Length: 113
Image 1 (cartoon, one colour):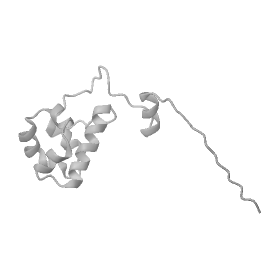
Image 2 (cartoon, one colour):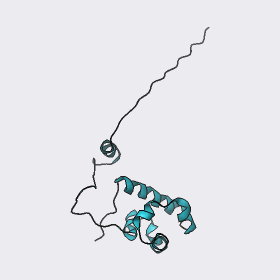
Image 3 (cartoon, helix red, strand yellow):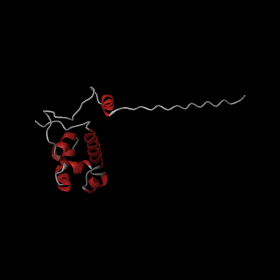
Image 4 (cartoon, one colour):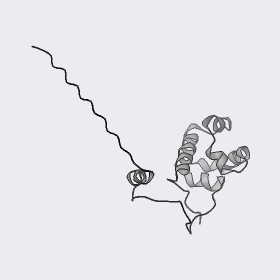
């Protein structure tokens, strides 16, 4: 009995724009935070960390002291710098994940009452 070797090879290339990816990834459709929104509020480090939740807000003083109160520096911070501040792994992971989403425009901290 001869062996039959079946090989399937195909490539699927999708060209999705950022808006299409938002529609696929976010529940409720695309949400755009760009442009002149009336609800847009200046976000600082304290608001950013409180928006993440999960106990991360306890590190506000340490992070503000290290990055000088500049959110852009926090968005560029890497895990080793946060580790030197004695921030637990779970909280570092949350901070870095939400920083990435914030840079892409997929997430904003909810407004504080």
